[in-house]
Length: 108
Image 1: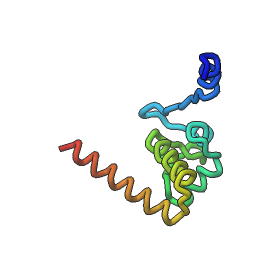
Image 2: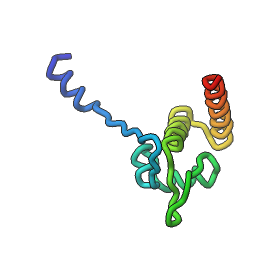
Image 3: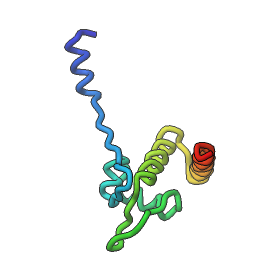
């Protein structure tokens, strides 16, 4: 690959990953932008109990960085591993348990 081709490829492949700030709350539109999940998909995940809004303002859910993290994980599991509802729930429950155990170990 020539230097010019490499530069063009590099420009083509640039990906901007936005990460939420700790302590901030995000409405569903911003959560959708951070996760590449449309707002209705996020609402569906909430209805199914996969994620929970931290609070509601004017009837709209607000999400923290933890919810953004889990939304991204959900999206990855669905798109990469093609998991359906039951399998997705089982994997997420196990992942949350592992994360909880890690935090407990760090606290010791």
